[in-house]
Length: 450
Ligand code: UD1
Image (cartoon, rainbow, N blue to C red; front, side, top):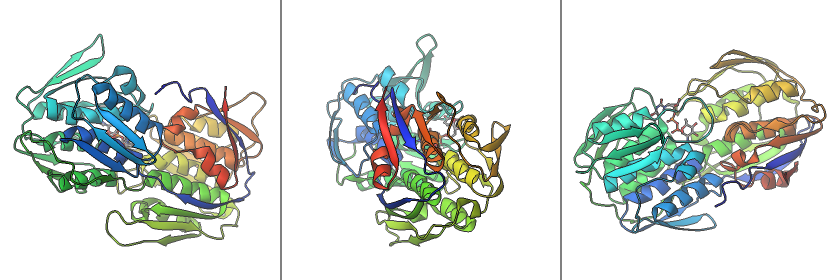
């Protein structure tokens, strides 16, 4: 994979000037944040695993390349991947590839569990706040590993020569990555591990249920206490394929976009129960939403429809949002809901409790005409509704991270005139073929290589 692919690409977007002319159907892809972890979990298996409903995002290319560099065989066709880690020969996670994506740190858990050692660079990823890894490191230490940091090379070496030992670990902060990584590490450990104050995201449940079907003994997943009875080094057997759950962040992104830009939009293959924190806000704001839930089985899917959405966006009511761990309002939807709130009438406050520094996109929205004031690094005040005007000649917009990138694309679609959005490679990390899908809905958006 060429890591420069897409780095010089931009979107040129013709704004709809507040018209809600988009319509059609969006079929939601598998959740990248679940699939990425299943790729990492492949290291826990004896033999090749099959992963289904995997999205075509560049983060999936990155984790595939990291595994291949370690000696794994990765084959992908359409949305089905086969990952075989039988011949892994290295325990050194590639520095350049790891720098592209923070989720690479998740791989350290399975690697350490299987080989008793791993080296990896300080992780990369979206530029959102400090993004520490202290919870991973102290968890490994509790499980008997030794952590060394080479300051000059910014390289961590972790070793547990006799294998990881079960432990009781209490996270002092709720972390998705630390929860799933320590959970995976504990699967092959000796004895019982208890993880307290865990994240409860559906993507963690998705991976844990699959691991259990393949021989792991994980209980309590989806609650704040997870217990894992380790296999004592015995690898899992690939009894069933991993089936990725629908991406709730992709579904939520298109739903908010539909609320502002579409008169009718059908979002299929999604899990409405994973999106309740968002849909309840939108329904209260006045967005005409219909929800069709299917059964309660975890792999069944439902639909969300926006129907007859013809009133102006200024007729929607404002609301106040506070991001929280699941099942609260997802931080990944925060930049996208901010654009929604610039278009509705009234004042609103957004409080970002998960990250500091997740408001970089505000500058671009203000450039377009939004009335947004920063209170501090965790809070902004938004006053709507404001029109987004054509920018002066030569001024362009920027995707600061995956989700802020989608937010800026959406702002351009709402606006009047032609807009250039740079840094499209960041959007590609999380949204499959965004311009193709928006074009099918009736948008005028082109990808340009500079
Ligand atoms: C995952 C998601 C990301 C989402 C985030 C929160 C993936 C690939 N990414 O990221 O899209 O925004 O959950 O829902 O699944 N923290 C520490 N020390 C640690 C680990 C985390 O202080 O050792 C802090 C982070 O800096 C952050 C907070 O905990 O402020 C939450 O981060 P975390 O839940 O770990 O996010 P990720 O798993 O990286």
